[in-house]
Image (tube, rainbow, N blue to C red):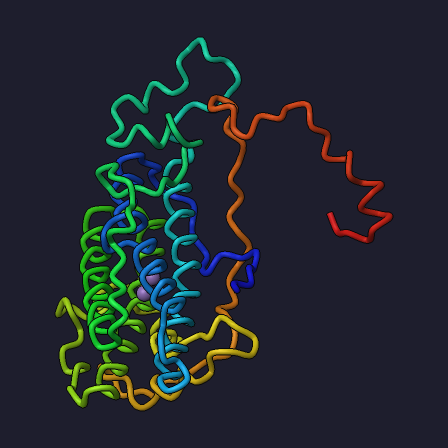
Length: 300
Ligand code: MN
Ligand code: MN
């Protein structure tokens, strides 16, 4: 089961230049072949379907804990998209002046037509995410090798999006995910080493460019975030530490398993967009629940 926490993995700044086309590019990191929906669903299905987990428990726990982290990455990318879209249409109740005019020239009109100026489960070209991006052969070596490849592909995409989108919101998100994705690259490489004896960590980094080239990634690495694998659980998945140990292949610092999740921050406030009728429900009075909340001791 997944235990949900009402916090975002990292702090995202307000965009300097909100842009629907920047948001469209960032969509690749959400619903693209190498996007966060793919990593989440690959590791989720691999963990559900893992056979022989009694014998191979550490590998199962590694994949399961990384799967849980990917959920927080879907959130991070979605919030970056939502923030990049905020302010790209004219906020107000009057349809007459055409408050959505600017959206006509946006590369991805789904952001305005099928969603509330917000993230969609599609790639940068508007292709829907598909389960065909999930590789779960059930053969452990093959699946781990695929995961290593998937994380390296995701790394390449993140670097290219960073080069396309100069806005600080997108770059903060990419910098963080480069560091966390880097952990996953090394984790799958280490797993393959334990399983086969092949020194997969010698391949990293793929692509060759170090995370240290990105200032938004550097600051997280200075705090050691590239060395930590989170279990995303209060009690379970600590056996992932049987694989996640030893020196980091790039800087030799010790790898460390952390019980629980990243601390996170409160979500950025997504304001109402009346020109999109979002969220609507104009007659709703938030005081309506005050009495019930008092009676039940629920904090509003
Ligand atoms: Mn990820
Ligand atoms: Mn990952």
